[in-house]
Length: 316
Image (cartoon, rainbow, N blue to C red; front, side, top):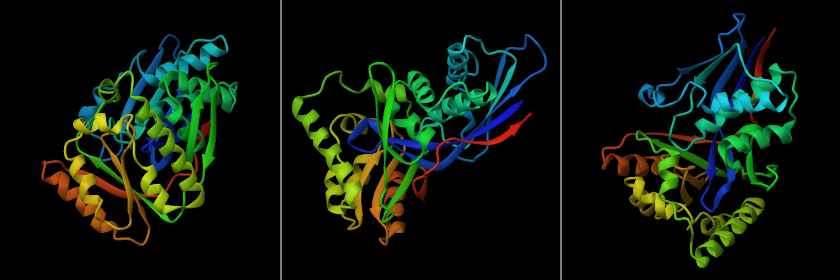
């Protein structure tokens, strides 16, 4: 039996929603799990880059053994029904840039989990899949939109259950995804965050997150300009992203720009703007500012991907 699952990229945090806001984006990894006929072969994992944006050098850092997120996802699911994974071949067809804050790790974990679930006859429902995926990732902001699609606010409860609600992204707002040619690992990006934050910063983010939800619900562009600010993670990660302070400053002068946020742990950024504005101007500001630092980038304007992970092939 051979199962293939297509999983979208995701962008987490979106400014004030640290570890709870995330959206799916139309870039995809495809994960294929196939039962092999030779006993004792174990689990074989392969990564196949399928986009010029995928740096083969960066793929060398991805574990392909029992330490990989893919293996852990499959193992947790098998263990949940009293089994152990064996005689499986897993291929990861990679189109999502690695270590760029676009949920590449979440996508492969989710894809492997859903493919294995299909292989086993769907023993896990959505609640269980979310819980297992969150156990692997440690937070729900990427895995939830990867599984269910759309713009999502989510939390992980003490019993491991993931609760979420979808929000409808205003069709009038554009999302420009800017991906530089340098990596920023989640471990490094998290290491610069303080273990405690001042009460005033926690209050600031709670206020902005509430504004974000209301701004999206009412399509209030002026409120969104206030909402897309953060004091919990972005100020600390800015020092890891050369030129970002200049990009944000230069974009402030563009009328239709609502804000600029770090995508996940970085290094990609999202520029949120009102459609009808000069998107080329936005792209040129980002491109030219990073070019001053000898940084190349890939820039695309996208819509929110409303579909989460999908089974695209099931061969007996």
